[in-house]
Length: 184
Image (tube, rainbow, N blue to C red; front, top):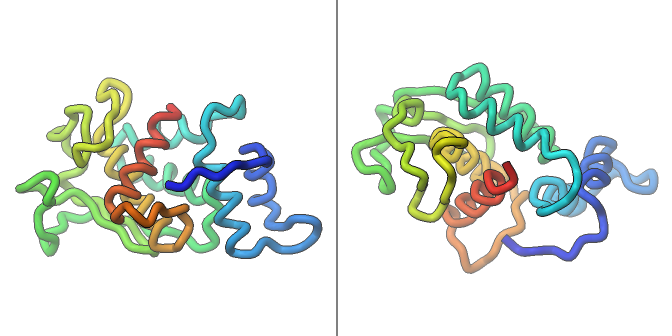
């Protein structure tokens, strides 16, 4: 992800996104991405981190109801103009994961996230995902990391992530998930 020098606080960026206007004028798509990036990826601010903590807490429960609540918060955090669908499936039609051979985990596009039944199990809680995301498996469930990784794909497909052209889609999603869980 590209780092942007910013002069707007995370709190102010969130406020601007909620109102959808700056100086009485509606935000352009580029401005929405910029303020969404500031709100969603700022480090070390003294701002309230409760949204991040709430999302992780809900996702750690690994239930459909709590996942839907977390997705609503994520949609608000990143000021998505159209809803993201969430589906739970056996994913029989999907080939098994290249990262986790023999398992079907999850996939996403610009409109929805599909969580496969294998992701709901405890099979993966070893503190790594895709060999690049590191997390404390005592604090964060693997399902949470998978969910955030797939949500990043939604943002990426909608053109809302500040991309580093040298990274592939999976590494961009991994970087987003890593930044998110590092805040908790």
